[in-house]
Length: 121
Image (cartoon, rainbow, N blue to C red; front, side):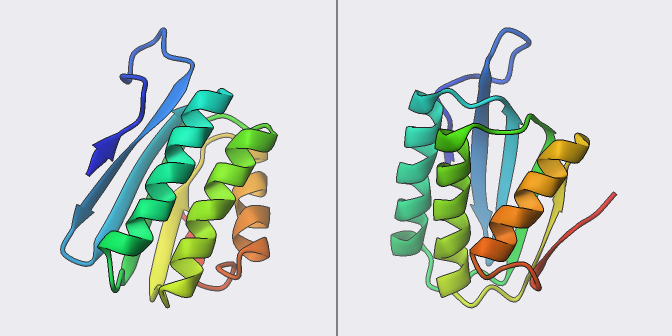
């Protein structure tokens, strides 16, 4: 569907890539998101609700994602709230950083997805 403002290079501060295939939404996220990346992601999250009627599976590859500041957390929360409203059947995420994992679990709970999206190793 779309790619974030930064290409996945070593020098990139952070970014994301979103893909939609059939009824599966996959997101690859990396680094620390500065405000412009978080804003772009929020826009993408809002667009997802208009483009998808039903997402049954959600996969978030946050293996390289760092713990996020306020802007990044708000962007992720926006996506999670969109997915919660879409009656997501199930989802998974991977996060290598323990603080990122704990942050994502908290954001998922706050958004009503805590029971439907689980961490995997």
